[in-house]
Amino acid sequence: MNRENLINTILLLALATVPLWAMANDAPYTITLATKVAIFALAGVGLNIALGLGGLVSLGHAAFFGIGGYAMGILASHAQNFEPIMQWPLLIEGSKSMPVIWITGVIASGLAALIIGALSLRTSGVYFIMITLAFGQMLFFFAISWPAYGGEDGLSIYIRNGFPGLNTLLPIHFFGICYTLLALALLFSAKLAKSPFGLALNAARQTPARVEAVGLSPYRLRLTAFVISGMITGLAGALFADLNRFVSPSMFSWQTSGEIMVFLILGGVGRLYGPVAGAAAFIMLEHFLGGLSDYWHIYLGVLLLLVVLFARGGIIGFLAGRQVAHD
Amino acid sequence: MSLLDLRHMSARYGASQALFDVSLSLEPGQVLALMGRNGMGKTTTIKTICGMVRATGGQISFDGLDIARLPSFKIARLGIGLVPEGRRCFANLSVLENLTAAARPGEWDFARVTRLFPQLAERQNQMAAILSGGEQQMLAIGRALMTNPRLLILDEATEGLAPLVRQEIWAAIRKLKRDTGMAILLVDKSLSELAQVADRAVILQRGESVWDGAFTDLSDAVAGRYIGV
Image 1: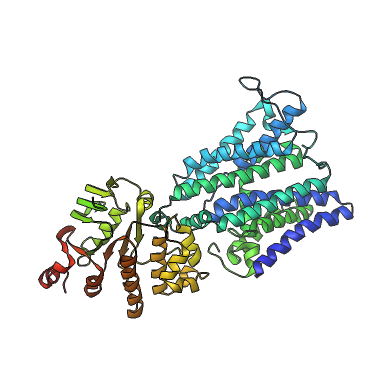
Image 2: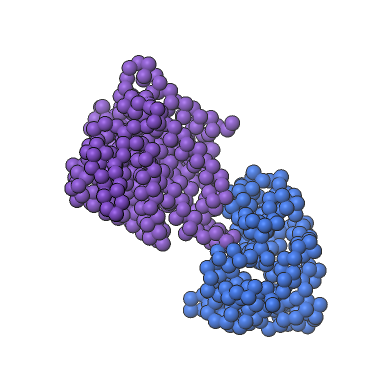
């Protein structure tokens, strides 16, 4: 086992251990914090496929995070009000089942990513960043002006959605769900990176013309990566909405896109466990520094500067001491 | 029917015309040497065949299909494997990853490529960026073979390599000709090596094909006039 794998294992075990310790010491808020880390890390795993593997600097991933969140909000609000979502031409009812909500959120985010990606991937560089940002903001303002689902005030869900065989109201059970999904996403991401698709995507990031010469279309590779990335981020959005039992347009905001990117840069862009390290660092800073000062983002900014200037591989790269192509 | 057929092909880089009238044809299993002095249009001809430079006139057909307007990845998928000038491996991937990324279904797989170039098996986990020039060239050829092409194009495959490594590359090209039915289009400056492997030759002069015939018919006078040997 190399040093990076060892650090990754420790990180994953630590994330599992903290809530168990919190449960033993009757500290449910700590479990909620660990759940938040798992969810943000999941969103980061999604962005890492687009940014880390594909080199796609997307400032619109909040769009998928928000779509996942609103998929949960819409389905659950209709279920709790016993009102169908639509009656004609098909009867579609709401749902309080997490798996149904996840599937809906993942499909909706994937479709959105397909449309946004198909248009934005025809550009590159700063134009790509601006187009993805624009799509995110369009959805943000759409959510604000959608009174049926709370408009600017957002939408509250009174009871957390259910999962067969678990009591999701118990923080440790909900953490278990989020942690399992994060572990599965990390496993999937690792397999994807080493698959012929992932390798070609990695090569296309640096030398698209050479990838074309072996019969692969960089556009199609990137679009596929963007859709997969959007789907995982959408799943994280659905879980985040369930954690808070609340969805609001802020899930679509550019600050959310920026935060997901900050996790990734902090933890290490292109590093498999970079999003986990980054999300953990972000939540810890928010928790500890946020208690000291309302202006804790200043310290976050300083840390980000230090990472970018002196630890190009992020926290994981700094600890593992091994450079990868992204650093 | 020829596998590759170029008729009066022209191409330009912006306002500057690089190819005026290039014609050549290549049969399945044949090895064609594309020759000429530096700057006469050999690499541009290859790039135009592969769709990296758009043809502005004439016809390019591969296996009877007009490929002049196809994007380069679709041309590669039809069965044209390119070993570009300067090797250009995927520097941030290992040897095995370079080969895996390019793999398409067919007879050529990692085992067969490493039988042709055993060094690649020894270096399979090494990053392409830190391979020697010869190993990078072997990897570039191996990567093109992994696409299972019907036509392999090698642009200056032995340029800048040590004599021993050049011999290994030439031996591999001869083996490809002997053991596979693959057509090969070669650009190289070594007449003596080309003579051992090429069936035909086409000579380019200022973007035009000026000589086309069996390699054995290439006289010293013609070589001296157009190639400078």
